[in-house]
Length: 60
Image (tube, rainbow, N blue to C red; front, side, top):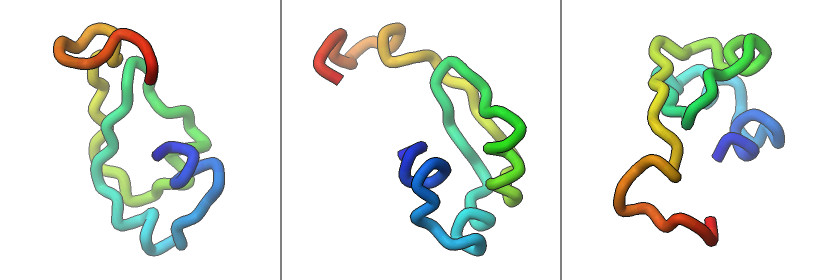
């Protein structure tokens, strides 16, 4: 999803600005990402897939 939103820029500016929350695994977004997503109000840092129970250990 990150590639779709940030790297490939498939969304228009008003669509990116409508995103108010972002959930990321293990690493906070860099300043350039935050500048691109101007409407962000909260960024949640969640454990990576390897640390969560119920997720496959490999094949992702």
